[in-house]
Picture (tube, rainbow, N blue to C red):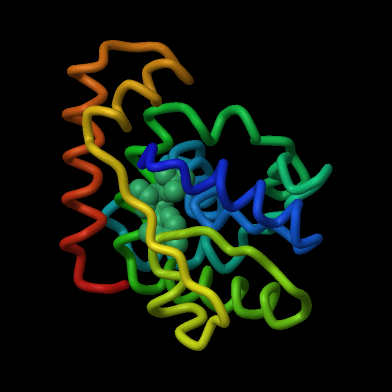
Length: 171
Ligand code: DC
């Protein structure tokens, strides 16, 4: 979180004339839907159903995210959705549904695809892979400048989310 993945991937895609795909936005969209309909974030079966049914599209130069036809671009960036996305993405069925969709998109065209498991799981034979990281303090300062909030509190949330994302069983 906050390492600069989106900024760099977007800029690279523009230069190459490739389509930019933000896979975190896909997990965020599923998480938002789960929050809205009140699905328990531990209910793996219901989460998988939502992930399979979710209609996620990227519009307008890939910056706009539509969930079932509705523009959710701003809402999926809310901290409560970041938190939920990190949890929802632990569900193997959700990952399976997202992976299938990501492979479909990336096989049909040239893409710069951004996300934690793209080089390892989704496209292990990708022509180019980039691993990006940054100092936790720097990442927290960036997020605070983007969304406001207390740097110390944000640093703790990022650390917690990183830990969950890095130690989950899958991907
Ligand atoms: O990159 P991001 O902060 O928008 O991602 C939100 C969450 O989605 C992140 O905490 C983990 C999950 N995610 C994932 O598990 N795999 C991906 N390829 C992208 C995101």
